[in-house]
Image (cartoon, rainbow, N blue to C red):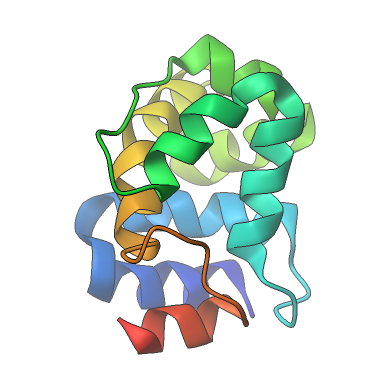
Length: 126
């Protein structure tokens, strides 16, 4: 799935922050067949944000995350691509991603667990 297609799908579900999130997901896993949300969450867990990720997926309060934490957890190439797409610096992209992540992940995991299947399937299930 192209980044723009992913952004449009997410836009219907998530509003203004969706394009940014769609670009990020497309950058991290562009094959479209795997669960891109799981891939992103695993990347964040491996980058040291496991507790925060679990708060977003779980049914309790969502912990906030900072731009520098996101920048440390994600590949430099992913932030560079998001920054380029958004017309901002990588630091600004990390800040925007940090602002969006808790709410977007919470919205995509309403039952307290990461749904199986492609992101298309997850969004259609909403």
